[in-house]
Amino acid sequence: MAQPERPLSPFMHYRWQYTNTLSILHRVTGILLSVCFFVLVYWLAAAGAGPARYAAALATIGSPFVQLLLIGGLFSFCYHLLNGIRHLFWDAGYGFELPVARKTGWAAAIGAVVLTVVLWFVLGFWPGGAA
Amino acid sequence: MSLRSPLGRVLGLGSAKGGSGHWYSQRVTAVALVILGAWFIASLALLGPGAPYAAVVDWLRSPFSAVMALLLLAVSAYHALLGLQVVFEDYISDKGTRVVAIVGVKFALVVAALMGGLGVLRIVFGAQA
Image (cartoon, rainbow over all chains, first blue to last red; front, side):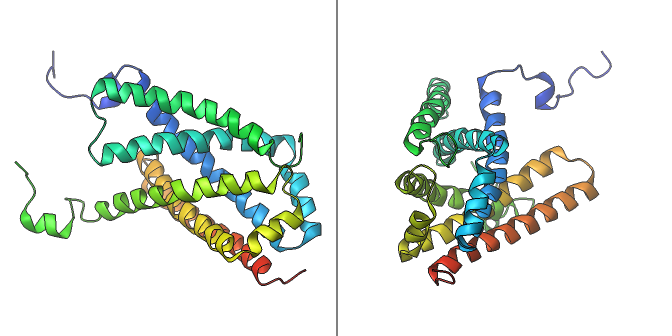
């Protein structure tokens, strides 16, 4: 009982729950999207460099590693978009009530998975590779 | 009751003096990226599987697409820069490493955005047909 009343830093006594999971996922997907940004640049720069360079770039982008990154990127896009809209509503002062926050949280998570699968098929899955 | 002084409200600054600009820019770019992101996904879908070269050139030759692509590059680079800065500030405790990481990522994103923009402009101005 040396220091009984000292407040702890939040991360030292918060139990793991959906709120911090979704929050951390927002950051992780944001970082992944930042990586995918460089793939977008590579793709556009190659297109600007002409058909030969573009074909070479498509081959690189079609490689298993980049495809895996892009699948993660597609999910990241969907989740970061939906949860980002959730954040914007919070910033405007709406949706803080626990039942609402829980519902929108689930909606963002499940919606992101569904949207990822839908876009995967719509994009067929871009580029090259399988489709 | 607000603990903020009237002058503080007018200047829009908290005790850290400069945080609100960063916070606000992150939100404004987020709203822009909702639109730009939806446009980009729709464009990819229209390009079709494999995004053939001719389709990409056709797509970016339209002034609207070119402007949207340039905006997507600029706004997402800025949004990523702001977001990664916060991540680094939160998780890198050593000041030297933190500053190097933040500045390094800023440089990388600015260079990348310009390279992507150059790719778009080369198609717009038809350096190769």
